[in-house]
Image (tube, rainbow, N blue to C red; front, side):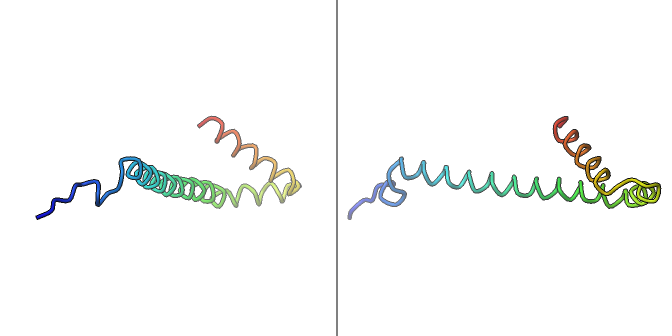
Length: 82
């Protein structure tokens, strides 16, 4: 009867370490993807909820460039404060 060591199935410790690092990287990348999607949805819903405000500003004579500038400035400040 021959005995098979554990290393014969799993490979060397270095190979196991590489596989573990790849698995952790994939899990972290997937988690970040979920986080980024959630944050972008929150920003989109916040902007969609401000349609009335933006409509009033446009009716009062604000340019589209000025509205875009305001929204981008708010987003940048929000991201930097977090």
